[in-house]
Image (tube, rainbow over the protein chains, first blue to last red):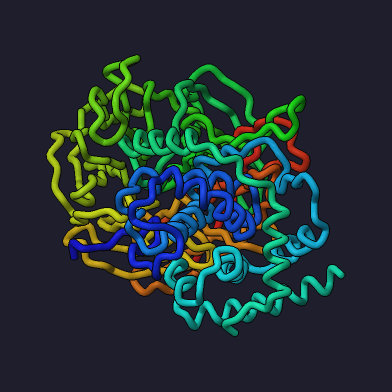
Length: 177
Length: 388
């Protein structure tokens, strides 16, 4: 055969239209503008703040290492999120490199919002695949097509997971109430 | 549904705000990028790999039962790497079982003890239940254990210690030697195999060849006695910096490796013939593949440890698939792991076939509550799975 394609560690380069940045944006500014949002999105998606922080660091390091290419993508933020998600959900990488910081699984914020904490608990009850779609649509403000591109899914799958995820989220929130 | 109701969207935003903010640190990201390039200078693919420490010693370990989840007794140190006069295992397993993986540690409270689970040295779980920590040279990075008692690995040496230079595959003053250790620990082969500018990995080995993954080339056989190399499966490019043949195993003229993207719900593997590289089958399991994917000695079956989410926990299972048809021959639970202070509290730590139908898998899990840093050998349990 001779052309066996290896598995991609990141998302495809062709992503939807630019909403995040321009091709002239320096990495430092991209980092300042996006890192917290991507970190929170990963924390909700993988359900573990320590792993999300590691994943954010790793994904940002990869973006930094090849910024000349990443900055030209239509959606560098989506690329970084996908790389971080791949990293966080890879058992192999976690086992080999897991060095989480010493803290609780979900460190409390300065003034915890009970409704926010309840919503976070409800989100954690969802399967990762549905939770991730919700996070992409809501936190990263991606359209259905953009979410499909970032997560390498069909748009139909995105709609299906979103619909089921929202229904389950409502049910979980109702139970918590 | 294609629209998120505003009230739900607001709650998701509040859930995100309830997460601690990211402690932005650009210097850390830059340092991590440099470290990543340095790591990939040496190896980027995971085959049957074991991180090996520098000290050795025999660790007697008793096993009462090799049936599912049989607990192993705690090890105690012993000074020699082998046990002279000990009876040979009967029958000898077809493949040797190494405890693979690094693990991780964490200090949950500033004044409290560090806890965690670490793989440590090149620990081998023998068929009689004892654990042997093999002595390996400094800089030893990957290990393949041959049935004849030898170990094959890569030995990395910094030839310019203390000299600051640019990291990456092109870094100056780095030696990577393919090294073969005899059963008694002697160095049988030590051969420079690094090509500057080219990332490199060890995917497997047998009595005659080591199987290397070379960036820009693909899977290469390296004859142990002569050093002659031959490209077996050409893969000229890598994707996003990753070498191909992830979590590979090479046995009986076949290579199996993970080929799909990382996904908690599905893992894709390809089985290919070494001769010509044609794909024999494409396999899938319903979860995230773990390391220690192993082909059976005759290459007809493959054992795939994997995990999948179960609420906040992770269920670990072992699938056995037919490499010719892709048929699932067995799918057995191994254990359930819970997050422990950000660590994955358990997991699989190696697999090896006893014969063509029976495979052993190592499962280890932190106790609740964990009180120290445990070695995998202390907590390891062996799960045995057979197919007809």
